Image (tube, rainbow, N blue to C red; front, side, top):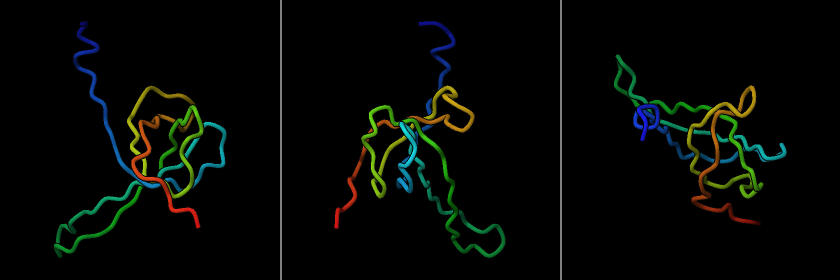
Length: 90
């Protein structure tokens, strides 16, 4: 094992798929709660990221786990690991 692979840190996140319109691309909304520095109230903050979905398995509304990776395109620096929970089809 080389030093480059030993120091590699994978950042993982769990979020909800808000769009699956692109080919092999999903848009994931990651929500987190932050405490306000002065008032102490918890605030919901969110981040939208683009993730690589090679098999087009994730659909809109699914809960997915993504992990950071090398840049695949200008905006895609995350890839899909697994679909944690499928969306309810109505």
